[in-house]
Image (tube, one colour):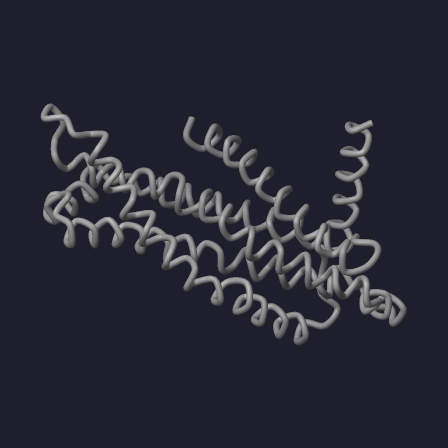
Length: 249
């Protein structure tokens, strides 16, 4: 029963993608909505990213210092380990898990409200592909801006580690900077950016699907938003494992 329900839901999701992804009917309107979505989904999230990244970078530095307090290890190991954690996992995967609560619920609730208030039905009656008109700008906007947010997160997290070193002296600043620069692998940055593209697609399409297919009233919109965030987080974790296995083999 659960398997059948899951397969039916996956089939409906694929049908939803088939109607969503296509050439926009009016490019001017598409670009207008596209730029609005970049601002609403991405730019508005920058304050949250800055706050979270600074504290996570500081915490990573402190905890790594506490757990690597071994005289046999070089002192720059703290900075190097902090950099690897931020590049490989936090700046892409953990950040997207955090943002899915904000962005995913925003998308699902907005489209779900339009569904229950029959605005989507009105678009369909006018002969407009409502899925393409409403959802495609959100997908394109999030895919465009999320890699930028990941890069901001990288720099801010490393700055958080620098800040805690400067304020508390847990590690010498020069040693921390040297650790960040030691054995730097550029591929890890591209790895994080590629993961962010997949996560942006998953977040936007799954959240839009739950909002677009909601039935009922405001209570169902709230449930759809919750389900969208939960499913987005699950799929982000699944693809995180798959992409790590494929790209870091």
